[in-house]
Image (tube, rainbow, N blue to C red; front, side, top):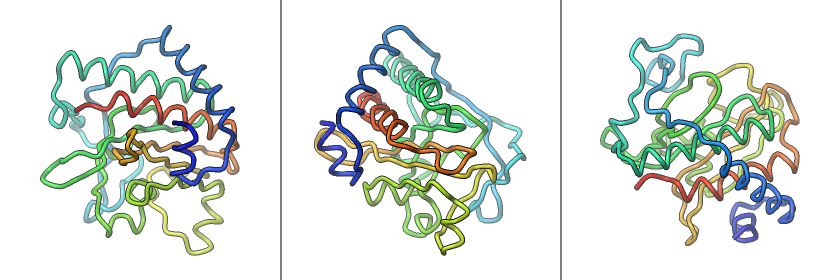
Length: 219
């Protein structure tokens, strides 16, 4: 599975490193249990909903139960996803991390944030070519390829399009969530406030998180 995932995503990192991180993550999941997050604060959106207004929160929280049925099975799945997010924080120290699933939401296919840690961020990303023009999340989902940007200012200066939620973010990784048949069901997103953050070790942690997250996506 590791070799297939790395090849599919065009990631050149050690399979052994990923296997080691899978073992570490599995041990963590055996001894840690975080509650599912069924509601969370989200930013106000800019004109046309294309850009979050960082630091300005909507008064009403986002209610995940309006998009995912709340029952004992989904409670357990979201709890596992939140624990995976916590492991990423513990193992890498990155400043923001989120797990998203592609689901129909508000009449269209969107990436829905299921679990995360860090500053409030938008809960839904429309899966459209127009939004993909500036969104690493959507580009990753549509291409099924890893996106590793270790110097965002340099990337933007060279003409790269970039969706800014938190202006402190200096590097970012988005990876697809692939089922055993290779179908993309969502993505993970990791962000850091420092440049050149994502080395092979941290990428191995993130790949391990993908492999376990795909097993816990709600139906």
